[in-house]
Length: 308
Image (cartoon, rainbow, N blue to C red; front, side, top):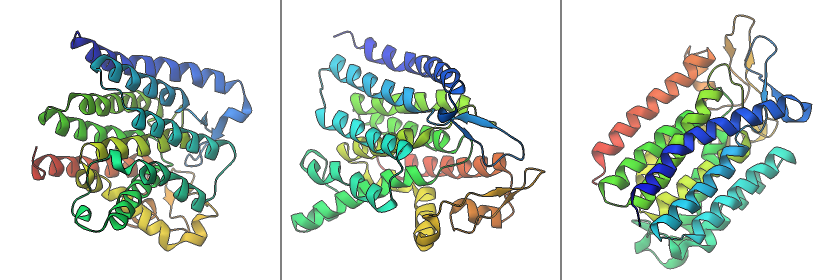
């Protein structure tokens, strides 16, 4: 096999991602059902509602191509990625309850745990407890990626940093397939970020956030990167915990309000955004940039602390 081909596939992926997303934005603009109002702008602004659909499909295809070129076919990962994409798409189209998303997101980890790396130190416990730990890990990471969302550039920015960090870790250990798949996710997320940054022309939609959360968590579990990913999702975890505290209010999905000067007002339900706005970080671009800086710091810590 020509080893340069998988790298060429990955390097061309952001170009394709940018082009198909631009095309999807144009198609969406012609259909009122495919656009949504940007609730965090002090003026009328709209963007493609499920803007991450094209690159979600592209990413699954590209991962399959990478696996074929390496002769390393991974049915479990591809099935899981497609499954998480379907959960997100169903949520975008029909709307799923919080409990439904929690239960569904654990299914791949529950039934494919034998194909994943042991989750230390839970692997020292009886098998049912080890299985429960792996399943809860999958539920947490997948839903964390989906819930820390809603501001221009946030989801794609966090996914880019997380995926790139894990890609570097696997590269240093010689795990080329996993490293390239993470790099693919990082690059397509960056391509999407260019169209999702303030002011956004496309929103990722739950299809993209569920796909990224589920796929990143599954690849990490295959390569024994449970704890590095958990560290990288500390912002997501804080957000997830705060939302659990106000479970009844989050079911209402009350958005953050915005003044005419663009200042964000704390929403009634608790979240990481709520906490930062309370601390005075009350402009959308500043809010997103602050969270991304925190993620970069966590990335540096992860690369230094965890042995390669």
